[in-house]
Image 1 (cartoon, one colour):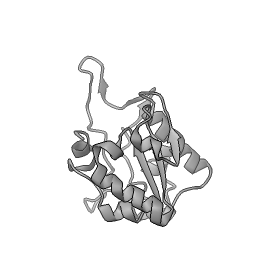
Image 2: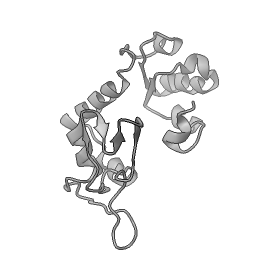
Image 3: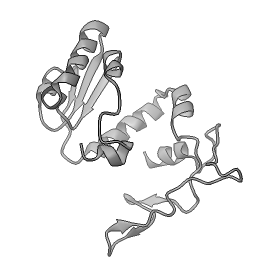
Image 4: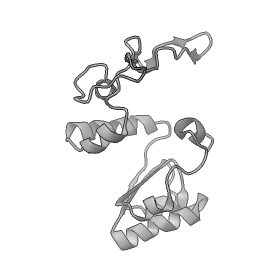
Length: 168
């Protein structure tokens, strides 16, 4: 759970029980909610029983969560990002994108600074001696109004969407 704070800005659950209860799909990746959070997992089983929700578990270990999954993906340890990039690539190639959501609730249209790049698995600013990154180029282009510049058409090659497509 220590990664939740840096990733989502808070070190606790990032959604409500209602979200789980009313979902059509639950994806558990690298965790075992059935044992680690049985009170929350109750809502997963309820969504499966009452809504026909599907449960996907992605984990090298066959856990109690995996035992009740509709689909279990036993990936190799350390291949999480490759798996997720494969899912993203599949969605892009097969037009499985919820465009209204992407445009309204993600940073896909934001324009990234010109200096930001990535090659061979490394992002701009990596210092091999320090084994750390200088993140000064890891930011959006700022317009004259002081806000991040966006391209609502998602055509600009520097928008997050196109950088993602290039990466996957």
